[in-house]
Length: 401
Image (tube, rainbow, N blue to C red):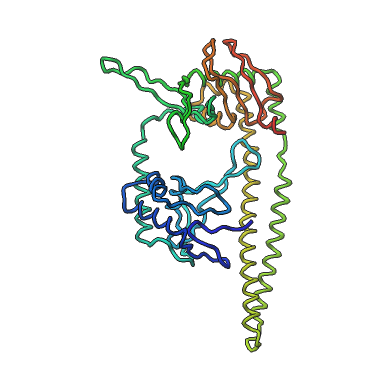
């Protein structure tokens, strides 16, 4: 895989050099952020209005600087001539077996780089101060607005646009100024224009109604006489890590070979005859090989860390799955005494997505189907709720196998 330089730089002989054509946008982004009151969204519009667009690269075709990219640029210490270590880490995507995503870390190590900075220390520091102050301001503004845990937030999907619906609180006042009881509901986040999308689904689904229906479905599944024995079998199953262990072993072997080659190259460089008329060329050749070997070792060490992390995740996922299976055996009793945070954690670990109808059904229900992350059912089935509503239940892992 070919490494790509950060936007604003070009990569030559393994080193970063400023790409002046691209650096114009980077300097403009920092200048506008530090010297005006506009934020990332405002800067995105500013760049578009002044015709400053991304120069196409092989890793992306979108010519626009969106707000998300601008925030990443403002946070990236590479533009201040620094190198960051541990800015991102791999985390497993919930509901998948071997899919991972990069997650930005709040704390990481910054070291002086050997490349030229695009923005000065003064501008960089001013941008970081503003980023932190805006983050605190956002936290302060939103703190205490709604401390309720919405059990199905993001898990229940909009029947029109398919995005996650989120829990909200509706506060209404009577004519005398007193408040009605707070009304909690799930609504589509795209009801308002977001990133160019607008959804027509304007219904408000009462949280209590949908939460209770989902719990009722799970209770009916675990009430099956065969359920406890099936769960016990799954708890006793061994997790297969043989493939990832082979991968780890291969990386370790390659690392040993690479380190051996590195030491031989260092020895060859030490043994060169400075009186040899080809000394400079030979040393340059060996230096280049040694430099490439260090790159290879870095890549192998990174791959080895990732592989070990994957193995730990697989084993942790098995342990998590076992714990969930144990909880499910006694779901009916435990769910009643769980607090909302614990219920949310269980639901998130158990359910991939929930589908609802576009219109409330004649019996008052919205729940259409539930897709489970874990194979708690052996085949797709329909569950009858107490109000004669039928809910389709699907096991995601069963469908994939």
